Amino acid sequence: MGLAAATLLSQSAFATGLADGLLSAEFRFTLEPLAYPFNALEGAIDALTMEIHHGKHYAAYVNNANDALKAENVQVKSAEALFAQIDKYSAKLRNNAGGAYNHAMFWRLLRPAKADNQPSGALLKAINSSFGSFDKFKEEFAKAATGQFGSGWAWLVVDKGQLKIGGTPNQDNPLMKGVALQGKPILGLDVWEHAYYLNYQNKRADYVKNFWSIVNWDQVAAYYTQAK
Image (cartoon, rainbow, N blue to C red; front, side, top):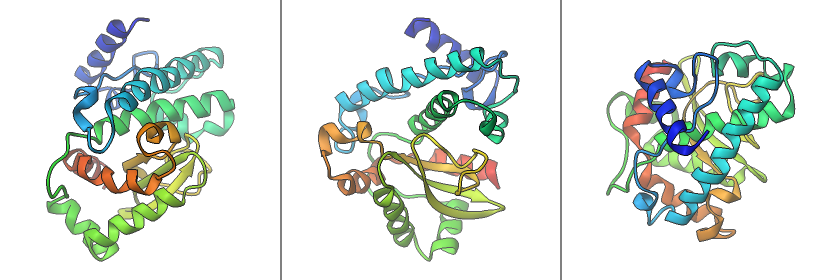
C-alpha cells in the first residue's frame, strides 16, 4: 500500500469514528498522516527526525503489525482488545502493534510550540490534585522519562479515576496485559533514541525539557475526559 492510499484509509477511519483512527473493518492499523509539517516542531524536535520517525520507524511498525495480525489470524475488534490478550501472541505482534498504537497517539499529542504551554480546566485541576502542582507533575513525568532504562515510553494514565505516571519498556503501553503500569494513557513521550538522537545525542533530559513546549494539551484533555 502506498503512502497516499494509506492516508486515505486513515482519513476514512477517522470519518467513521473507528477507535481513534487505528482500525479498519478487518482490524488493521493505518498509517496516520501528521496534522502539521515535519518542521512544525522545530525548537523541540527537528524536521529530519520527524520525517524519519514518521516515514520510516512508524511506517514499519504499522506494516509489520498488520503482517502479524494476518499471519496469526487475530480475531479482535479493537486495539484495546488486542492488548488485553497480548500475551497470546508473538513478540513481533506485541512490539509492532504497540509501536503502531503508541506512535499514532504520540503524533496527536504534539503541536507547534506555544509560549507558557500548559493545561487548563478539569485536567489542570486533576493534575494539581494528584501531584501538588503542574510544575511538580512535570518533575515526576521527567523522572519517568529520563529514568526509563534503554528504549521505552513515559506515560500519564488514568487508572480507576486517578492520574498516575510511569514508564514502559520497548513498545509496551499501559493497555497491555501484564505491564506494571496499568491504565488508560492520556499523555505519552517516546524516549527511544530514534525520537531525539539526531538533535540531542545522549542528552535525553534536554529533549524531555523541550517536549513541554509542544504538548497538545487540548488533546490530552480530550483523552482525560474519555478516560474518566
